[in-house]
Every structure is written in C-alpha cells, then in structure tokens.
Length: 481
Ligand code: NAD
Image (tube, rainbow, N blue to C red; front, top):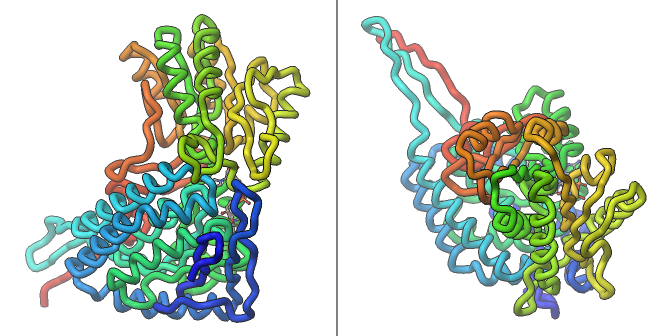
C-alpha cells in the first residue's frame, strides 16, 4: 500500500510478520525537499520489543543450525532482490531522505554488492588446529556471538542497516535492528528483500520507536549478546556505557571531523575538485565527509578559487528532479546546525566566500558553503558539520598541519594530497584516523574495513574484519578418550 505521495505504508517486522506497534502510536515522516508529511512510522512498545527479542532468540537457534551453504544461498538471493529493486528502493529513499536519485539507487546497488561480499565471507570464518600433545586436539573455533541489537541513523538508509544485518547474518547471528525513524520505508524495503529470499522467521527483526527507550530495553535484555551502533559520538558513548553496565561487547561507528591536508607539492586544482566532490556528496551528511581543508599557504589561493567554482556548480534541488546534484539536508536539525555553525564562524571574523544560508524555498536546503579566515576556536573547526560547509585553513608547514589535523578527539577519516611518496608515507604514519585516502577521497569498499580511532569508535565494518565483532573465539582442548 502506498500513500498519494507514492510513499509506502511503514510497518515493523517481528517474528516474520509485518505489524503495527502494540498501542498504535506513530510519528510523522517528512519529505525534506518539501517539508510535507508523507507518511508515518509505527513506534514499538516494550511488549513489541520483547516479542522481537524472543523471536531473535528462536531465530538464532534456527539460523546457527542452518548449513552455511544454505545461509549463503539465502543471502545471495537477498542481494539479487536488492539489485533488482534498486530503482524502487532509491525512489523511496529520496522521498524520505532527500539525496539525489542517482545517489539513492547507487547506494542500493552498492548494498547488494556488500551483501554478496559478506555472504561469501561467511564460508571463510575459519578456526584453526594448533599442534599439541599426542592424543589431544587443540583447536580454536569461531562461533556466532548470538542475537545482536543494532541501531542505525538516517544518512545511508539502505547501506547503513545492511552493514549491520549482512554482517550479523553472515556470521550466523540473528538481529533486532532499530531503523531510523526518519527513513523507515527504505529499511523496510531492505528487510522485505531478505524475507522474500527465504530468511527464516525471527532471524531478522526490524523495529522503530523512541530511540532512548528502545536502546535501553534491547541492550539490557539478556537475549542481546552484541550492541552495534552507527551515529553520533555522544549517543555512541551513552550506548557503550549501557552495554558496559551489563558487560556486553559493542561495535561503535561514530562521527569524525575529517581533515584534508593539501601539501605544498600537490596540484591545488585537482585537489580542490576531488575534495569538493566528496564534500557535497549526500549534502555533506557522511561520517567520512571531508570537513576541514588544511591547505599549504602557497596553494591556498588557487585551491580556494577552484573549490568555490565547484561549490557554485553544484545543482541544489529536489532529489527527484533531473540534474540535481545535491538534495536538501535530511532534517531540520541539520539545517539549524548549518545556520548556527556559519553564524558562529562569521561572528568570530570568518568570511563566507559562497553560500552561507538556507535557500529561499520550502525544504531543508542549504547552499554549498565555503568559508575562510576562520579562527581556530570557531565551533566549525571543532564540531563535525555533517552538512555542506567547507572551512579552508592555510598552514605554513606540515608539522603544524598534522598537529591541527590530529588536534581533535575524533579519528575517523583523513585525506592527504601530495606528489611526494615520502610525504605520503609520513601522512599515512602520522594521521590519527581509521580510514586514510591519499590523492583522492576514496569511499568505502566491500573488501576493506572502515572504522575509527579515538572518540570515533571501535570495531570495523567491511572487509574480512567485519565478522570479528559478530563471532566469538572459543579455545577447545580435546583429550581423546
Ligand atoms: P543524534 O545524536 O540525535 O542521533 C544520531 C542517531 O542516533 C540517530 O539515528 C538517532 O535516532 C539515534 N539515537 C539517538 N539517541 C539514541 C539512543 N538513546 N539510542 C539509540 N539510538 C539513538 O543526531 P542526529 O541529529 O540524528 O544527527 C546528528 C549527528 O549525528 C551528526 O552531526 C553526526 O555527527 C552524527 N551522525 C553520524 C552518522 C554516522 O554515520 N556516523 C550518521 C548520522 C548522524
């Protein structure tokens, strides 16, 4: 069923059935490009969450006993359905999140690829036999940790939930996932692909609700064995503390404030083009989005001119419109944050070279913005903008740039531009980040891990490391009778 906006009715998925919350309470869904209410999301009661937990407990028993070849076949079938439905998933995603259709459908297609990678990796969760005494078999086995409680945000409405779901299911775990209440229909469309692929009931459960209530309930339950979260640093700290109280491991994919260091020997025009493209993707609402541009003083004029040109070439509009290259911000909170951070930078003497304000129309549109002359204590240089703001800061020597880059408590992504192999190696060694790109702004790939250091969190998603958090290592010493 869809509304007259073409937005599907949203349900939760518990124990293999689509359902409303027990009390029938719901929250509105807003299209960020029009500010119109396009639907509503049901909110779970404690009883709904208990049903999901019971289902996940039973689902885990069934799934861990399913032969790995069968599990892999179901996951590949789900990936096939995601790829087949990419255009429809993308359409719904753009309605509720705002990003341009090409980004939405591209995200859905990449998600199918991620799932295929994990499905195959499930077959390689090897243990090992260790040489021991005659008559003794000493082995190390890797087993699924158990039911997972996962919490995901709104910036990658299909890729985000799928990272948690596909890792958990590939490892043999079941999962209760709280999707974002702002982008629920995309998460539901993803879950439908798994259901249609033949996933047994209870293995995957999707809920929505009041975030703090849902997370407190799911984390405290003895059924939950792992807490997996993607989102902001403050919420990550809160959930990690709750998990710590009941001694549960957690996987934390949190925010950052990615520095881009453009060294004296780099090509400033190429660096600006690549950095600007990465900056304005998804309207800057990406945890690895470049967000502090540290440019050698000899290049800063050329870099800035090219960056401003690139910012002004961005076509801001409804993600459904032909030619749009940047949609609105996903919600009003981000719009207000852009206004606050810009006003603070300007009040402290910063200059806006282009953009700097919301667009004069309905929708949460904020212009691609480039700022200079920002003092070091401006909020924008300390708080992740998570939006289309690009502060450019000149530096005189690399030691100084590295000190600024590493000077924040975060360490998710970092970028460097240089033609010198020696300088590149120095950046690789000294930048405090879990994800580093040199001479481009590389995005995440299925084959390699993503994750942070410092307050950006712990654990990795993607690559062979993705299953680590979802598996426990068991030492077995077997004295042959
Ligand atoms: P927020 O801190 O209010 O929420 C972040 C996410 O956590 C949302 O999905 C929210 O529903 C969820 N959340 C909040 N409280 C929760 C709780 N007690 N239990 C479980 N989940 C909870 O921020 P926001 O306004 O949605 O986003 C703003 C900031 O969040 C950004 O500035 C950015 O730093 C961060 N963020 C990071 C990512 C990422 O990919 N790492 C994604 C989205 C947002």
